[in-house]
Image (cartoon, rainbow, N blue to C red; front, side, top):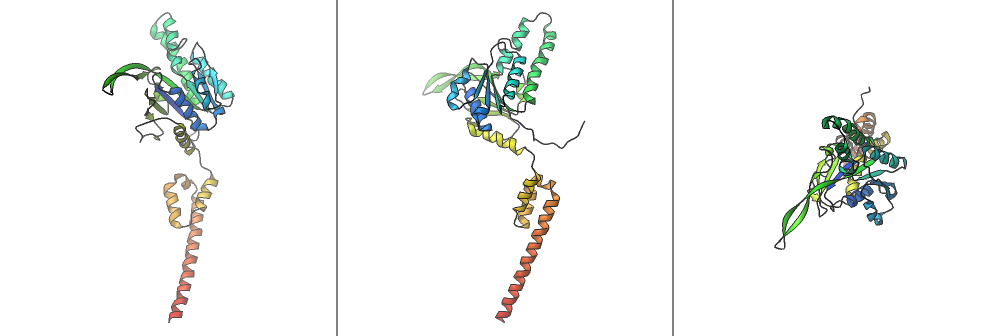
Length: 293
């Protein structure tokens, strides 16, 4: 066992996009992925939706791994392994719902098992958990789409009542969203609300539409988590031209405090510089006073 200082240096995005059919989950996940890595060739879609991800090939040269039934947890793990070996930076699981409710998924396997239902769940749950752990332990950014169960409500438009599709509970194991850093909820008009956000990047936004800048914001948060180097500290400290600027840097940039000696050296130099300037000013002021006498 080893006790280490906490940091987010290995942070990778874990994003879930939940919504009903037609809400734009696949399209939005591709825009998110591009915003994160800025390279279509480094994006891989693990497609369980009969090749639906190919509909957006006009966006860029991303990669598609078609995953057909049975949608067992083990096959999802194999697909993730294959994408990682291919050097992808962002993996899109489209969708995660098939592992739970699809042909050969957890519920399908459970329905075909004989014997005690509770005992059978004790056999299946570790399989599902292994897939979730594989997602969490991946060194790549992962975006997962999740279907919502659907219902319809009547909305008044132009004086007429029109049925509108809405998404309800996500089709996955209860509590799946706790495993993700950020969870986006999409409606049929492609509007997004952030129902979980451990990054706090989207806490001030109500509803919006996902585009590549959404991914850029997430990537910025991830990069800010990376450890800072001594060279970076030296550059920031050297750029300070006064004691006030140095003190502001110390207050506003926590990692600078790890390099106290660099900070003190710069402070000493700035004080010498300030004292020298003050001395020159006093001498010049003294000369001017004598000239006026």
